[in-house]
Length: 464
Image (cartoon, rainbow, N blue to C red; front, side, top):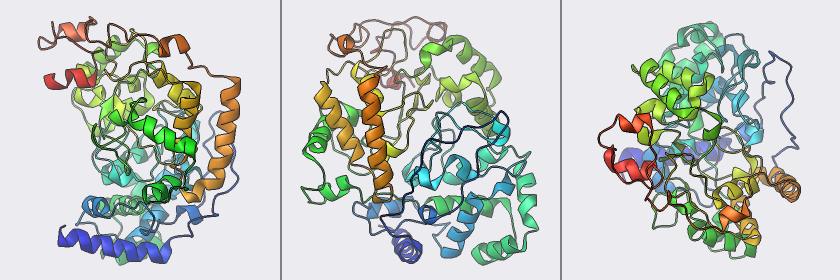
């Protein structure tokens, strides 16, 4: 371990021990997000106990991994964290002073907003679901399509996105806080200089790196407490790594169980939303309109236009990345719905039903691992029980209520259930014998004639 990393980790431990809120009993009774009138922005969340940095003495806290992802150039210092937290809730960074980072990443909702897709300045509705900020420091790329690498870069784009915070520029946003004497003092204390763009983004990212969330019942189970999770959750954990094939994306490797991040940090087409769009014309338009690849232009396309459905393709312009999105982690997944990049699934039962049936043969770019799973109803229940066991103690009460809500809903309606497909034989597509023809593939000589297992990112990976 590098000395700088160890020093950063020890400093983080001291900071979090001083400022973190107690582990349990903090969640509040929250319901569905409030309905909004046309043109109305969501109410601005207020900082509370759940917005505080999390302690490093949580069971399951990955000491070595955490040390490796803290940038040596931006140490975790109390003054920087305090400034970043204040900026995270600062509505003056938006064009009309109504929204902040916390609008889409509300601490009481596990740093999500509870909506299928996010709503920003003047009630403008985006195209994508807000992912949680919890454990975002472990992401190798940020956003659903991985269009930036660091939390500093991620913090910048929503400020100027016209559907999110809507400032004309970072400079415009900065000018609205630069005259504030409190901010002048905090910037000086944190960085030894006045208010500036680079340090503003560094402060927000530093605060976000303190939002580490572990200590779940599953973490206690892995640590040796056999009674920490139910028998159903234990069966679900086995299914997660075997028959249900979740580990093929929700683990750092295919052959080793992941008990920490639950993501391969890769991008996959899992068949969500693709049938509602004319993908090939959109991809051809993206190739023309987004050829320069400027971050602000890509960001606007991802959030404000139908091209959002193209996912990773917006960034790479590679056919194998069409409609592929980043694998999210599954910690606190019970309380961070609705699910998937477009928020199209209401319950974890819907999510598992989607994977259970595989998908049709109408998506030529579908990942090869999306195949019928033949999970029984009791196995689906077990898998959901395991996912629920990943809920951190701050959200235990909310998680219990959400579990009952989703369970009740699953007994009434299961729009994704397709038992015949779930228990059917794998299609010719999933066996790799059928190649789908499209104009994008016809223009790529490397792909012509190549066998594809569903045209997936994995089956095309060698052609990149």
